[in-house]
Amino acid sequence: MSEPWLHIVGIGEDGLDGLTPATRAVVAAAEVIIGGERHHNLAGNTSAERMAWPSPFDAMIEKIENLRGRRVVILVTGDPLWFSVGARIGRAIDPKEIIYHPQLSAFQLASARMGWSLADVETLTVHGRPVEQMIAFIQPDARLLVLTTGAETPAQIAHFLTERGFGRSKMTVLAAMGGKDEARFDGLAESWAHEVPAFNTLAVECVAAPDAALLPRVPGLADNLFQSDGTMTKQEVRAATLAKLMPMRGALLWDIGCGCGSVAIEWMRAARYARAVGIEPRADRRAMAAANALALGVPKLEIVEGTVPAALVGLEAPDAIFIGGGLSRETFDAAWAALRPLGRLVANAVTLESEAALIALHAEFGGDLVKIATHRAEPVGRLTGWRPAMPVTQWSLVKR
Figure 1 (cartoon, one colour):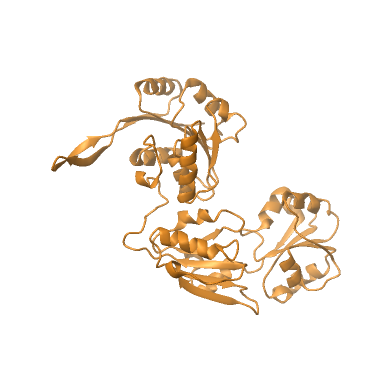
Figure 2: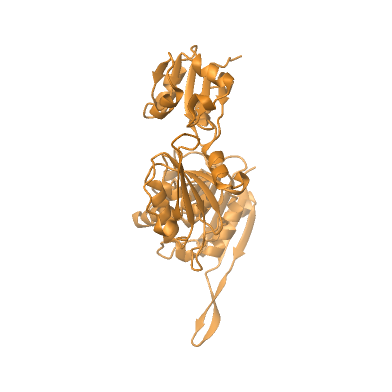
């Protein structure tokens, strides 16, 4: 049985004084201490060998593993398992070999400073990640705590808020919490002009103007929120499609024939850490999908150039597949073979030929076959009438 030899220690601005006696003893007894410059400064003077974080991070995993048999301490900020490197290390090294020593996290400290119940806020990180991913969380009356990338991040987020009609949102930057240099900066998004320290945590209380953009996490965003050439899965059909795809935390979607990316984007917005790969042969549509993903807060949408089924080769096995374009028996066979157990597959068709293909697949594999028809009220001269959209045949099934 593996014995613990690696200690991952959370440390705050109060340095060693903030650690329990047992954790201070672990740091004092270390032969090797790994951390950033700030962490080493907080840890004070010890006789241990000091090592800095290398880049890329994967190189650190190999370096850590080579230290097995020595007393090793890794210093991190706050809680090692809350948006920190502890989880990444625990995936590479047997957790039985690791002891975690958590300290108060920036989220806990920030919620205490703000007087907010931590259970009632969204905790996010954009540290070393695209700042745009916080856009998906901008909603009326939402409270957000955000680990930032640097001094420039609050101004970027203020711009996102203002641009979407949330300029009156209250923003507070908290820096060096728990230390002698703790500082606080308050303001509104629309007039944010503070210069803040590089290492900070941002608290946002979202306040919507009457004309603010409403972007719920529930699928079914308005069509006009997407750049499109008109060939997209429309709002009502998209909502029904996502319901059958069942977005789940961390799950991966293949969006085959993704067009402007509307289905993949709503999938990623609907569940934390949901991922999507959009396969699209046309460059203009790939560009629209990328722009839409950025504007709607899911910048990690992966877009693949190619035609199916060839473009599917080598992709990570998905948890769900949407076929909105490029439907053929060959594409279905390749997609179905790759789909993980309990995976969901949904295919939509608007042409008679594609509908016939879905009917044949339904007869062979089962599942649910439905026809979705929608009508929109539009002007008819000086009056109003119903204008029908093209009906959509939808086939869905779960891989058992």
